Image: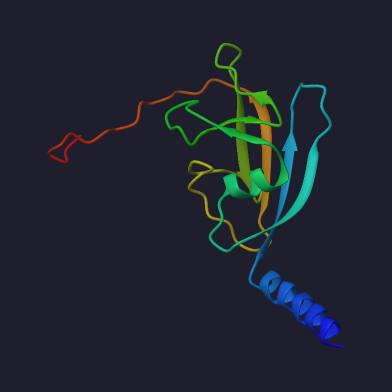
Amino acid sequence: MTVGLWGAASFLGAEDSQDRMIQVQVEVNYGSQDIPPVKKRVWLKPGSTVVDATRAAAKLKQGVVCCDPRDVEAINGVECDAKKKSWWIYDLNGKKGSTGAYNCRLQNGDRVTWNYQVMAIVCRPPVIPSPSGKP
């Protein structure tokens, strides 16, 4: 009997923790690549980012693509390619992301869509403050 109650308590604990989670839809479209799109719903902790959601749905690699080591460099092995001007660009709820994916905080019910696109991107080097605190 004790084992049965423990199992029920564990199950209820799992539900309680899921109640504190947010659900996000992640879609990955590979553009002209001959790869079927990925569509997954993921559960995340509140305060999670687009990067967190993507990592939960696909294999994600981060690195300096444009201007920050936290940029999304590859999804499921498909890498950004500066020579071909091919980049991973994300939309949040149908609108182009307005900040780096690593900074964009998600809400319950959000929809993240990644598109592998050919486009010209102007990269600006990061501003690194001097020891005096001024750029």
